[in-house]
Length: 381
Image (tube, rainbow, N blue to C red; front, side, top):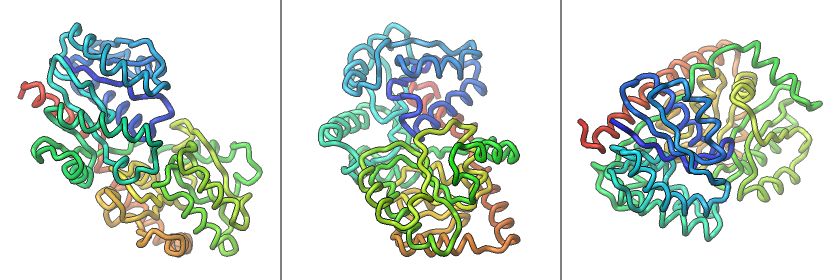
């Protein structure tokens, strides 16, 4: 069986959790199923990264579509024109598109991963043109694909609601946090404390999210502003500026002690693990998630989590996170102070139970279930 993988959406460091999903699922699939051929259709930016990840597996082939995917509209055109021709020539049994969109026409059956319907629930996250293009492409992918993979039962319901596809066509497959998030605390401390900022050696609260409006980071900053006189912590925000950046900056400028907020655009995997592990608390104030991978990563890293009950987050966190409900500044501030005030024994037992829960999610299981769906899509099972 030969599986084509449409990675044209993937720009390293730019696409958030979908990069984590793609790279980990592919690595596990290649490792667990050496008899399955994987043909990766890559772009100019991601080709070196994918080769670094997967070139040691002899069943993996690489086909470069030599264009800059940072140009979104160029990527759409090449996906709709050049990709189907390449798929035909490569004699693919099924084409998997893990990044929301897929070709309108394909010489073989298609399976597409639609992670969520964020653009419908939170249209403010995109420009008008990007929103219209996304709607056309996602709707077409949902209808053209013989199977749809998504990340949670919540996302399945959203896809059914907004696309009208039949329920039997959509398969929720949960993601995972890598075991490395639970390892090497000494290395983690060293990485964080070497960060070149005069405030970085203070205890801190962490949040990891790009500044889309639905990530609700401005509300977290407002909550932090309410408690700066009652805690000694900094607030570390890791993520790229997006459509909600102005609102976030306005909130930062309004609060007392704004110099205690540390902004970091990008972090390597090692650095990100370090920031998770050394934080006293992780706060994820999102108003919409198809899965909520940072919640799982923080639990695996041994850091208590304050988050919301929005979207799929309760599927991921279960009883092992502290919920701020409603997700407003007053409630989030109260939950932050509550967790920071835990006694050591309570914190230790909470962290241990949360990590055990997070460990039940594995990339191997994600890969296994994904391959099952791809086999069905190709008519091989």
